[in-house]
Image (cartoon, rainbow, N blue to C red; front, side):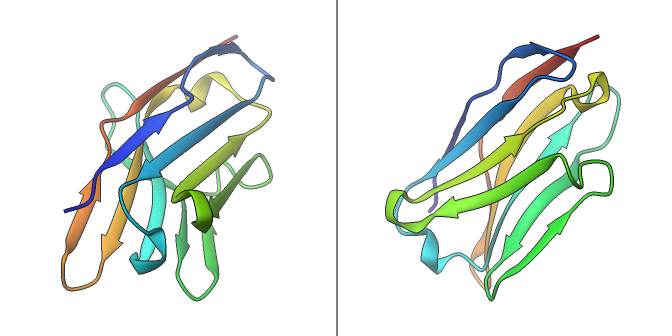
Length: 116
């Protein structure tokens, strides 16, 4: 079982920055992939960015150049640095972990609100 706890969500003005954190129980080096998803009201949950072990990093086109995903294995924590925030980035952001052959795990979500 994996427990994920997100933090860092807040209300900011357009153009501002936030850094989200996802703290995992146990070593994140055993995860096959970690990522951030978001869900805006009335919309489907969508991938924001993920890291696939082996080094591949993927970003949604809408956040490329503004968001940066990273991880700190020593702290068992993943981050999402979000710069130049836009009102359309408003959503609940979820941390996601995949362990191949075991399962997919989600955090409880953290709210990001960007006002114009």
